[in-house]
Image (cartoon, rainbow, N blue to C red; front, side):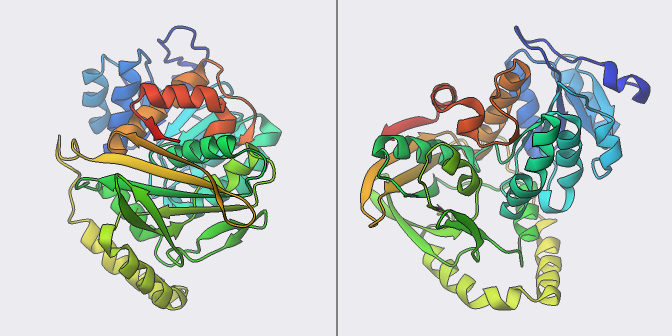
Amino acid sequence: MPIPPDEQRGYWGVGYPGMAGRIVLLGATGYTGRLVAQALADRGAKPLLAGRDPARLAPLAERLGGLQTASVDVSDTAAVHGLVERGDVLVTTVGPFVRLGEPAVRAAAEAGVTYLDSTGEPPFVRRVFEEFGPIAQRSGAALLTAFGYDFVPGNLAGALALRAAGPDATGVEIGYFVTGRAGFSKGTARSLVGLLGTTGFALRGGRVRDDAAGSRLGTFHVAGRQRDGISVGGSEHFALPRVHSGLSDVDVFVGWFGRRSRAVHRLSTVTAPVMRLPLVAQGARAVAGALVERRSDPAPGQNDRTRTTVAARALDAAGRVLAEVALDGPEPYRLTGDLLAWGAVTAAAGGVRGTGALGPADGYGLDDLTAACADLGLHQVYG
């Protein structure tokens, strides 16, 4: 049932025992948004479903038990701001976040709202921590960006490896892999296109520094064999130093390209200088974007046999491995939906620790995060 604009602030869409705040889901009709909405409903929550198109919101809301809906221009900061108030939990799956993510995170940071998103886009993650984190700190908001497959499992594996390694650990390397043939959603493909020509980063000597995506190659032993991944920016670079003092170097690698990772690494090294030219990057995004629009979302059941594997190793200052941890879990989209739903319900019940831009482990506590991820099927397989 749609909520009139003048009543949207007063609607408290709750229905979970002990829940004190309202959950607002922005982008509810997208591929990931629908998974989050279903996972929230499965937990007994009654989120307010928000998005651009009332005609698409209505059937989803009805299927999930007659939830309330609100039509909002997701690109309008004032409109999103008018949808939330202090004490709310705002979950957004609206991407590409580099292009469309600012209105929601700015509204949350300014209004003192707890915020979670599904982004995996490193430039946006960096903005949340560096630009919006201080705003949230002043308002009392809590910003938990990249709270899905990217980058919660890596934060968890990295934090567990660092805990096992103890105070001698100064570095951590994390690798993301999938087994089985995974189908990307159109939203994910759009986000990848939006990253063409952007600058990556890594933690070096205790500082987050620019570092071209794909410029380095990391090798991990996963499921009994050697797997390669290319370097990317992630939330781990900002979040893990908060749970392990003395951590000075963080590297994150993704191995989605399988045996082609080394070729992608070499190609990235060659093309990075050219892609920094604005007209080249703009042209590449236009060509790739046209191809993406021909894609469709994964069919029901298409990713059922896909598994998530994340490995982490903690290192001392000499580069010696002190501890290793690996996690195995469900396919990335299902895991993202479940993580965002758990994070939102827990936040609405007052379970977030601290304000400003937070990582998963410092935001919820490492032990609680570990237990919750295990309940969602993300299990530690060694370490």
